[in-house]
Image (tube, rainbow, N blue to C red; front, top):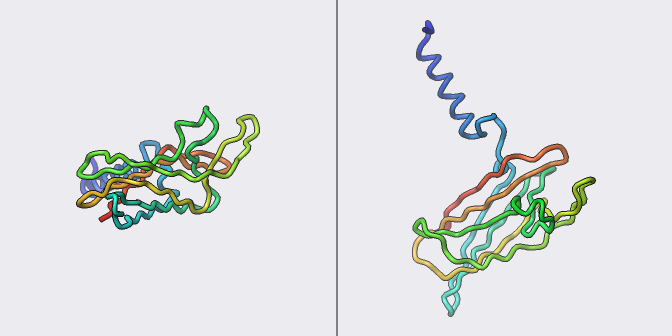
Length: 154
């Protein structure tokens, strides 16, 4: 038993918090390389509303576009989802074309770098909407585990 049980307990809790934040192996997740903002436009006469999602990607990193245009990496594509009251909201999401990245021995694929804007057209809902953005971030040396950024739009 430790001479300093409180200190040992605090050290354990701190390491547990790091493991939760960065994953069990201590590796940052992909959502640590992005900043996401979302704004809801006013509902139009047909009751449709556009949610504009802006993703700022850390310098030196990219996320996979949607579509990736490389079937081996399709599961890594960026995905935007909208929920209200915990339930999925049908959304027509318009993903922009990505930049072509040609990786030796892997092939061509589309990625987003810098800033990307994605629009989601939904039926206007009462109350806040939860927006989730699932990404997989890579740089020239490594890829991070998938991560999801979540935010609420009033």
